[in-house]
Every structure is written in C-alpha cells, then in structure tokens.
Amino acid sequence: MNFLIIGLGNIGKEYEDTRHNIGFMVADQLVKEAGATWSLLKHAYYSEFKQRGHNVYVIKPTTYMNLSGKAVNYWMQQLKVPIENIMVIVDDLAIPFGSLRIKPKGSAAGHNGLRSIEATCGGQQYPRLRFGIGDNYPKGRQVDFVLGPFDKEEQKDLPGLIDHSVKMIQSFINIGIELTMTNLNTK
Image (tube, rainbow, N blue to C red; front, side, top):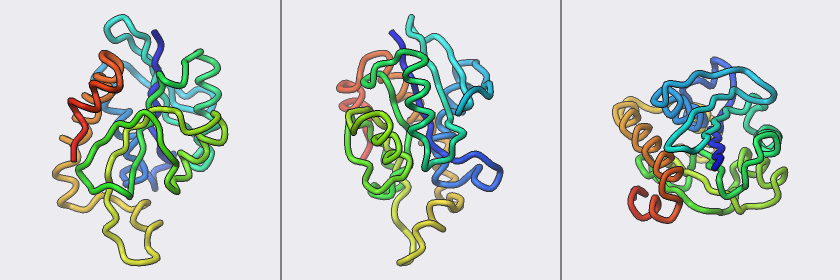
C-alpha cells in the first residue's frame, strides 16, 4: 500500500522556523527518523522510504502555501495514492499550542494551503494532522503571528510535539486513522 505524507509550508530562509512551516518541520523529522533523504523534484522536495511493507512518499511543496494543491494533486496522480492514504500536516490557529489532532476530513477553516488542496484535489475528504499553534496575537496581526517564529516557551516544547506528530503519522500508516485518533490525539 502507498501513502503520501505532505508537510505544508513555504520555501525560503525567511520562513524556515515559522509557525506556518510546522508541516515542513514534521516532514523533515519523519524523513530523518526513516534514514531517508530529500530530492528536489517537480513542485516539491521529495523523499521515500518503506515502513512495515508500505511505500511512504513524503513531499514538501515548493509551490508556496497558497498553491499547495498543485503539488499535492501532481504527486497523488504520479504515485497513484488514494486520497484516504494521504496525510496533510498543517498549522492550525483554531487549536491551542501543544494540541495535535488527526482528522479524517474537514474544512479549510481559512487556511490557504488547505483551501488550495480542496480546490485542486476535489474536496475536504482527506486526512490531516492539525498542529495547534494557538491564536495568541493582537487583533489584525494574524499574518505576523503565523509567519513569525515560535516564542521561547513554545520552542522548549517543540521537539517533543514534533516527535509526537511523527509517531502519529507512523501510526496512521501502520494501524489506520481511527485507532491513531483514539490513541494519540492530544487535547
């Protein structure tokens, strides 16, 4: 069985350690733990490895967040991965920092990367790992918050949260979404 894991983010040094790039950070850790490497291919940084007999493909779109769907659709078609076997890793303002939730489907909730995937891949019926970044910003400063770095307190917890996210993705591949949600979603 084939799985496609998509870490959402923006390419470029200026975005490297920002909240909006948590999808890239989790994807990097997943690939590192698998002992795999990245290649720059069409629309994405690409990696692949085997896990318990499954082919796992990982991409970090190079299309920038607002056009993520272009890369996701291209790689889904290329690799012939059914939509239920993809996992999109995304930052989420609607849940507090420290919360990690896998869901089998859902709305874009104003997230431009998810909105692009919905438009290009035909709807909201795809699994996603929502990495809570909270909404601790002054009115009108959402963009600065999302494109800003994690604060000092958050940075202390980040490695553990990234590791837990990787464990969630590995579980999704090994035992499926329902058991992973029950066993590993955090509050």
